[in-house]
Length: 99
Image 1 (spheres, rainbow, N blue to C red):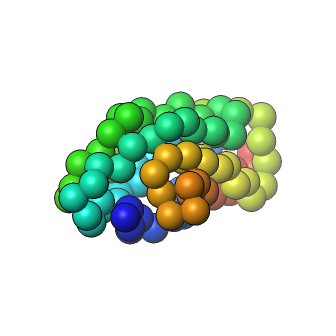
Image 2 (cartoon, one colour; image 1 turned 60 degrees about the horizontal axis):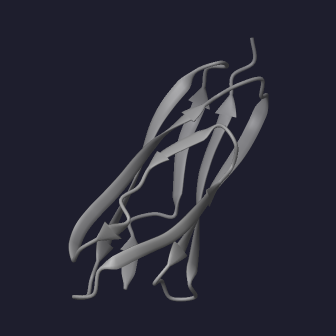
């Protein structure tokens, strides 16, 4: 079983054309490792995953590249593996400042 601290990372108000780091924290609560079979992400996201996570507190991080966007935005990361329901969707929200 994998428990995420939060399934949403809110980056708040961000500058246009910027690169912002994010982190998802989670805990693997049973002795069986959490294994990622595959992932799917929205465009302009780079995520650093490990294929296996062992019992205890874990995290993965990444970078979002804010391009020609305006207003409120939501990007998704889908994890596929030995999860309850076989997949988990995580969200990154932010609002791009107007110039």
